[in-house]
Every structure is written in C-alpha cells, then in structure tokens.
Image (cartoon, rainbow, N blue to C red; front, side, top):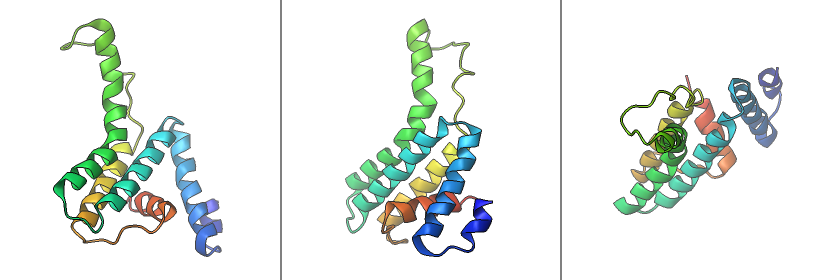
Length: 141
C-alpha cells in the first residue's frame, strides 16, 4: 500500500516512503535484520565518502572493511561464541542458530560494489545517506 502511495508523492517524502516500505519488508522477515541493514547502509555511505576524490588503496581497504563488518559480524560472531563456549574449533553442532537475515549478503555486496565504484570514479558518491539507502534498497532485482 505504501508503494502505491509513494507514486503520488514527490521529493523527500517519496524517498522516506520507499525506504520505510523496504525496511518494513525486512522487519517482517525478522527484526534482527534492521540494525544490520542500517549498519551496512551507514558503513558503505561513510566508505564511499572516504574514498571519493582520493586514490589511496589504504583508504579503499578501510572502506571495504567498514562495509563488510556488519556481514562478518552476523556470520561469524555467533560461530565464535559457540566455538568459544565448547572449546572445539573444528566441530560444532549448534550452528543452526546463526541464521543470517535474508538479503544481508546481497545488500552488503551491493554496498561493497558501490564503494569500489566510487573509488574508481565510475559513480558519484550519494549526496545524503537517505539517497544512498534508497540506492541500495532499490537496486535489488
């Protein structure tokens, strides 16, 4: 319903409506996904700002690391907690509890592509974090 309503809006209200629709969709899949998706958006926007206009590879490495941190956190912190508690680094039986929120890997890799493209000057950095969030969440198809 909000997507239909956004058709009649213009400017910033439309962007907010589209972003809210995207986040509501992810919320129905699990509230755990929202902070991680927000972290990917924020980290990639900061990473894009960091590498824009500069060509140092060390800054690109920082931007890539910032962008991938939420995904790495979601994938490997639960594993480290299970393994650390059991003391068995090679065999663990309770890894089913580390379900990664749907779409997090895809959005993270889209965000990573954005940072690399900004570094290579193939795209212009997003002017605001709102525009960047809309870019990331609407580029799924």
